[in-house]
Length: 296
Image (cartoon, rainbow, N blue to C red; front, side, top):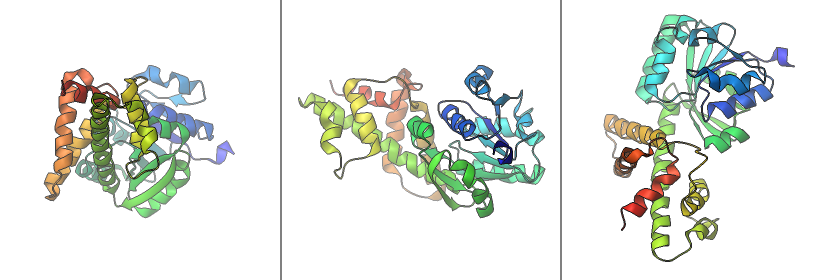
């Protein structure tokens, strides 16, 4: 069975990339890896993956090259920098980018990569966090040609419960921006709620349970409220810097499109304030500390 599966390659073995690649290996896909910090590949090498020295080598055997990287600048470097994917890419291969990037930059990079090599691009950012990556229940929002999205659908079925094509290249990133606007604003309101409940003498650890199934219920509420109430911020499941990056992208996109995003703009300012206090690498559950500190 393994011999019939397409060979895959993956760059970016971080909080999300590690469980995603584990699932691909468990499904039997031949997998080649590259990561800026090689040691992070070690647990996957024990499962049968192979590691290469630079991103260009990812294209040697793989029909689909996947990325899960920090931001637009890192993706641009991995694709177009020295030893980058552009040096090994060829027509017939697909690049599937799970990273959360600026939509305009995604469209520009996709056009350049195809013009120079023939390799086509599918932007496929995900939502669901590390629990979703581990369980294979991510929501995947894709931008790209319909035939390209359909080509990778069987592969992505091992990673997500749902893959939705949102339009041409860049549409997946716009959808992820919308997702992150909701998540970030939700996280800040939940922090306000927990801090207010505590100050009012209510057991904040019961908030998520009390509101479960009601109109205010949500996955962020069920995950974040108990963590915030217990001040349980580790293990880190995601980072404040990631939400801040995505909120900045939302504000930039709204400016480009002439759309008003006042709530997300305020959320970006509060997230930046929290990050400036040494919290960029911490879990967003720590936002409750910002609200506790602002209310002496």
